Length: 169
Ligand code: FEO
Image (tube, rainbow, N blue to C red):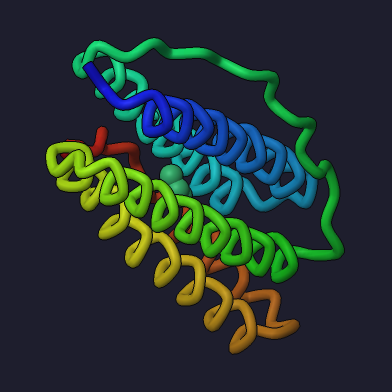
């Protein structure tokens, strides 16, 4: 049986991962509205990744004999200033998720649940990639600035991303 405090913290993290998915779905529609179908595709795959992150925690909680308690999902932002702003907001959000996962791992340590701490380490490692990918896209967008051709090429690259279900844990 999982510790109650840890169970609550995992449930809160499930909500944050589902909100991430919802936020990126909103960003995907904003990008589609800008006519950037490649960027929209990239963001839609991010939506699937976040849903998979939520389900990983959901399944883990059940496996550990805990109860999943889903909360309301907040309305995400629906508009941004421009494409660069979208990815700056993505990075900021991922930094928030990293902080939240670190705090969640602290709870696992506090209640001396080594199995949970080990499981959560996957999520913490994943955040390194998530933040670095967002930073990389921001850097490219800054380099491109107002070069329409370069943006067109990058949009094409972003359109090539396909979803590969993460192997969690
Ligand atoms: Fe599931 Fe991008 O954090």
